[in-house]
Length: 330
Image 1 (cartoon, rainbow, N blue to C red):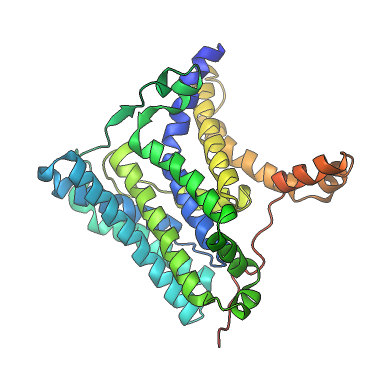
Image 2: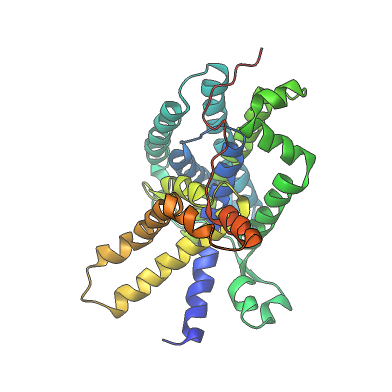
């Protein structure tokens, strides 16, 4: 197989990773504020069902209006589920893990029940759109600019979330309430309110990610249509070190590994298919184990000082200090 044969595989993997990118950005926003939202699995499924149901029902309005309303409805459902998480954990001060896990199971089953009338019927999908001039750039054009508007939206979302995190005062306060909520509160920040807002924003992203599956990359609706992707998103956020750019790159790497596994499955028929299916997950676990080990820290110290610091920041995954902790705001 030549490099030219891999370009379409990589391009497809990057494009189809878009829902995962959006879901992981949403979870990153939420967790950087100090809240763990484990309802991602149920939220994505509810978003997928809601988005497709609305777009299909309103298909008579035209493709674009029905799609926009479908994505809006999915985002609203995602924000609503996140509101339940926020109320239960921030106001009632109950276990973030327990509430999120229950909502993940509830959302998965509720999406199957409510979405039953829409199972396996055709509906509107996001049309492809190639960007003029940019699509003709050697290699980069074929990889990134021959997809559709949802893919380009994800590119913009990655950049905007990163800029918001690290180049704005609001982003600094977001990181502060996830790291040192007491210090942020002492400076006049309403920590609970801000955590509410960021949890809702993250939930909306995850709802839209669900609609991205049913209205684009896995068009249609079926029971447990996106099963497993919510848990994958939670793992990738850790894998990406709660950094929007690293998280997005991790999503693309995961998508590429899955695509390569599919190719290897067809070229090496003697190997059981289950090996290729679980290979991306095993590699992710291996990387997490390696990056958390002491010997890696000693190995990095052998590098010159500037490279040592840069490599450590790139590889190490350090969660927000106050992640999952109850904050008492008097």
